[in-house]
Structure formats: C-alpha cells, structure tokens
Image (cartoon, rainbow, N blue to C red; front, side, top):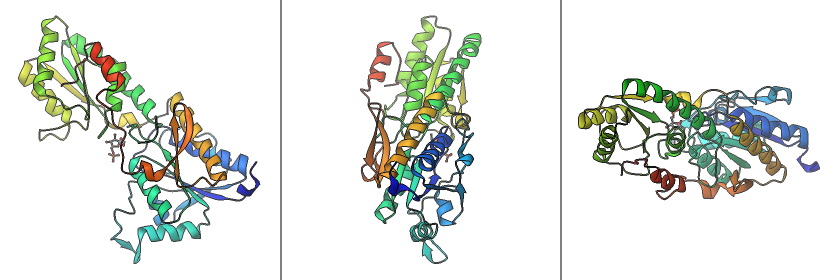
Amino acid sequence: MAKKSQGMRIGILTAGGDCPGLNAAIRGVGKTAIMNYGMQVVGISDGFSGLINKEYQELSEKDLSGILTLGGTILGTSREKPFKSKGKKKNDISKPDLIREHYEQMGLDCLVCIGGNGTLKTAGLLAKEGLNVVGIPKTIDNDVWGTDLTFGFDSAVNIATEAIDRLHSTANSHKRIMLIELMGHNAGWIALYAGIAGGGDVIIIPEIPYSEEKIAEYLVQRSEQQKPYSIVVVAEGIKNPGKERSVAHYLSNRIYEMTGLETRETVLGYIQRGGSPSPMDRVLATRYGTATADMIAKRDFGNMVALRNDKIVSVPLDEVAGKLKLVETDNPLVLQALKLGTCFGN
Ligand code: F6P
C-alpha cells in the first residue's frame, strides 16, 4: 500500500454520451481508491457541468456496491464543453477558471474524467491548466485513438447483432431487403462488427465511400441468384445526400427506386447505448477503473488509461486529443468480409 496516497481526495465525472460500463468503471476506480489506497472519493454530477456548478457528493465504498451491472451512469452526464464556450462567462468568470476554483474548493487532488474524444480533449486541456487529471476512454463507437478498445462497444455490438439476427426472419418471410442503421458518426466499428456477426450482405461505413449504383447492382444480382432477401447494415455517419434526417430512409428509398425490390429500414438508435453492460465491458471497465486508481497513487497524471495488446498502459492525453481511431480500408476484417462476398458499396 502506497502510504503517501492515504488521504488523497479524487473526483470522478462521466461526460459525453452515456454507454454501458460507466458504473463498472466508477466502481473500479472508487473501490480500489478507498480500499487499497485510503483515498476519499467524490462523485461529480453531470459531467463538466457539475464542476462548473459545484454539484457533487461524497461516495463511500458502500455507495459503490451494487452498481457493476447497471446501465447508464449513477453520476449523470452532459455534453458541456467548458473550453468551447470560453467566451461565455458565468458570474464573470470563465468556465475553465470556475472549474479550477471549484477543484480547489472541493479539495481535490485529482480529477478522473471518463468519456470519449470530446471529454478526453477537455481533460487534456484541464491538465494543461494545472489540474491533476487521469482519463478513462469509453464510447460505444470505439473510436478513441490510443487504445485498442473502449468499453460500451462490446455491449453495443451485441445489441446490434441481436437486432440484425431478428431482421433475417422477417426479411425472409417477406422476401425483402432490410436496411438497418447503426450508431457511429465518424467511425464504422459497430456496423463492421455487427454487420459481420449478423451476416450482413452489404456493410456501409463512413470510412469507405459508397456508390448507390454498386449497392443496387449487388442486390439485384443476389435476387437473380434466387437469394430471397438481403440485409444492408449502414453506419449513421455515412454520406447522406438526401433531405431525410436519417440516412436509412434516404438509402432505403433509393434502393427501391433503383432495383424495384421491396425495401424496409430500421434505425436502431439509443437502444444500442442502453441497459446492462456485457460481461466483456464489465471486465474492461473494471480493469480501467482499478488501473486508474493505481495511476493516481503513483501520481501518473495528464494521462489516459488504455488497452494495448491486452495490456493496460498509460497514454499522454496530449497525444490522444484531436485524433480518431477509424476503420482502415485494409483492416483485416474488411478484407476477410470481402473474401466472403460482402459488399462495402465501393
Ligand atoms: O458517441 C456515442 C454516440 O452514441 C454516437 O454513436 C452518436 O452519434 C452520438 O453518441 C449521439 O449523441 P447524442 O446523445 O448527443 O444524441
């Protein structure tokens, strides 16, 4: 036990879109900090808003029991970006200044920021302002640079795969094309994994530009080969030339216009982010959480905990900021799917 960590006071916040595994991570950090290092733990409400408004609560070891399997976040979250609105002042003080002031008033020795790209960028900027910060990467999108995996992703892929599985039977009964839109604004990881796991015939992701003609040609060919139905999996962030809010509606109409084949679309949406985390996400979030408490005890600040080749490592927040981990066109999964005849629309 590192004696000098005794009495340290750490604040934890969750920011950005929620995802399964956040509570497992909070529990991992908090329990390790209290039980192994004798630290005090403070839960900050609603992401960076809680620091701006000084809304927080002390968390005991007991408060952290029974939350491992819970979806969402017991702390609440928000998309507050304190540096983006730097010009705007609250009570004549800029938001980053308020955060620094409240961090000191709350007696914090360290701030743990659990979030995706936006949150980790803010965490890096707060570290530059002199706060002791550690980042934990989470997002269903799995697009945080510097780590092989974020928790939330495995749960989302499980949910999306089950949805695709269910589309197969109704598609087959009606001899239809079924298009499903999955989350992923910049990165197509969910569509790629769930598309492969669910046997998607067409997988369209933001990283691989698609042509409507190529998709239509492929679907007509399948129909001519007496394949009774087809499943098209698309990520929400692919090019949307239409006026429809969702690309699924646009593409489904276009496919029908171009092929004459009856087509239906499903937008899976927030179901992908809700509910209990998968066992893999519980384990990953717990690993990140406990490793974060160890980092704090070693005063390893200004860094993000990450997974590389199944080892927990620490990556400078500076390096993570402003980058995205995207699917490369020669990703082995893409190449393998191509060998099975999957169409990527290119
Ligand atoms: O970053 C996770 C994510 O679920 C994305 O896949 C999606 O585009 C976005 O969040 C939706 O965000 P919001 O909660 O603001 O609607």
